Amino acid sequence: MVSNLVLLRHGRTALAGRYVGATDIELDAAGIEQVRSLRPVLAGEDFDRILCSPMHRCRQTAELLGLDVTLVDDLREIDFGLWETRNIAEIEESDPENLRRWIEDPAGFCFPGGECRQDFIDRLERFNLSLQRLQGEKALIISHAGVIRHLICVLLGLSFESYLLFEIREARLTTVNCFSQGGVLTGLNREGLR
Image (cartoon, rainbow, N blue to C red):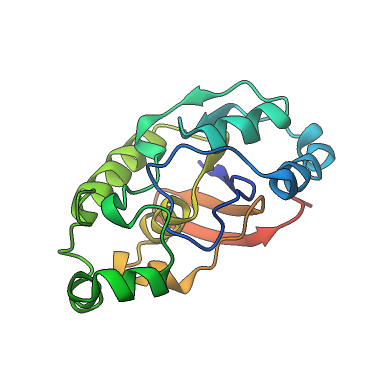
């Protein structure tokens, strides 16, 4: 049976363009408007489940859409530790050695004072096991760019190193049809579902 997944990244925050994982911030004015523009798009959709990261920016996205959600801790973004709220230029200046290590070995990297990438991947694989029970259901998942990128890889059977192939825009919809043999990406960064 086909399960239909709709993956939604939260709206924009004031820290757009910076590494934000565990920092629990709200949407900015532009992010609120981005999400409000989705209301008519999702109004007629009948989801069997709506699953959401517990981070404030995702919960706020759901609230603006008028959705009742189930919070799922495994849908949190990776914790960037000491790199939280910094951009790449700031990290390159303050921590070039760890940045080099991340580039050379992304799979084995642990963010300084934060989460190891393998622990993040283990969380997403655990979440994927729960998705496999959605026989024939339609689910909306509200989460973060890194989570959605990695979930696409899991669902399509790609290596986790392929995650950077997917740009995930704020307040946009990505759709995947899941079959027993694997997933099919049916839309990326969509403004609508039709």
